[in-house]
Length: 255
Image (cartoon, rainbow, N blue to C red; front, side, top):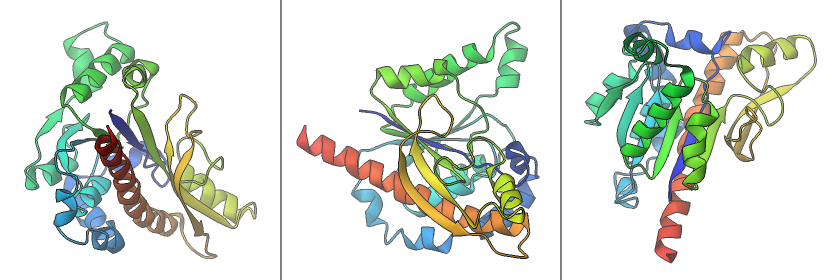
């Protein structure tokens, strides 16, 4: 049984912009933002031993702060793929002695003129599956996945989860943090939140797995709101991943 966990980190403003910072800037800023609670959730290195034999692959595009939260929590990450060569998350993985791979849509299309995003997604799914993961985490992977990527996992009875910075049904899609901040300024909402949900073909409409509400604060900038939300993201990505690994382990024991 394979599981896929999608993590969507819509940034403050526009979702791809968070990956436009330099590696050094991301390192300083995102290392600070990896929640202390997420690290405390890793009670000891024995937590990785309880998942002995399970393999987790993580796909990234940028700084990899959610990847770092998983590493700090002793999640058994065995493979990291990035679609951007300059992603600082690759360095995080290397420091943890985790094998990495780069597979860029732009580079692929340059090398193979005429190849579409759909062709890329088919190859991407093949690469992920060939790493033999028991669970796959898309941690800030800035690429909209087509059915050509999703279908192979559906056929393999793969569960797909996504982390999204909004409450269920509130702000689907990109720029969720900015949209929540704007709505609060207009008096339309009093709180926002983050969730991990099952991925379906309709964007951000799958069954919620973990949900955390976050109160909006008067006088707070969108950047400050975003920082608080990212801290919670680091917590619930660990919580949701452990929940999925526990379920997978239980299923194996009953087989």
